[in-house]
Length: 110
Image 1 (cartoon, helix red, strand yellow):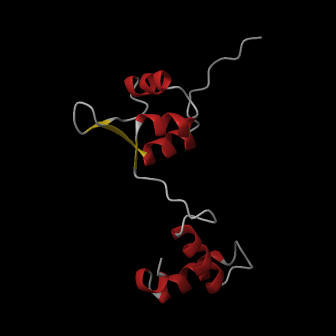
Image 2 (tube, rainbow, N blue to C red):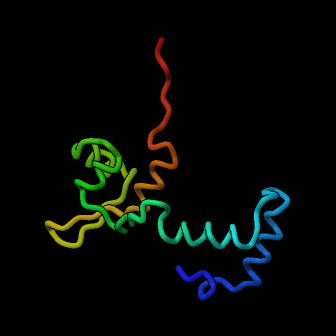
Image 3 (cartoon, helix red, strand yellow):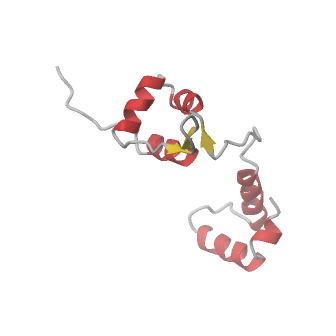
């Protein structure tokens, strides 16, 4: 990611000025490096596809395909149908589901 082409230097300087009271060691260089690493998807360099197959989504969630279909039926995850045989799940929906806890907390039985 070319930070200088996507974000104006004045914006980066302003962001550093706003964040420095909270992160004292933050510098313009540190922020640019962090943004570049984020743009490169961290250390691994592995990019997650925008849309996942049913198998990929189940693996990402570490659940079975029937459980994934149940989550879709319960409207907890969206399913995009491009044709009768072609279905995809947005990767962002998987991330949102996981970030939200992925489940509703029930009563604990003693």
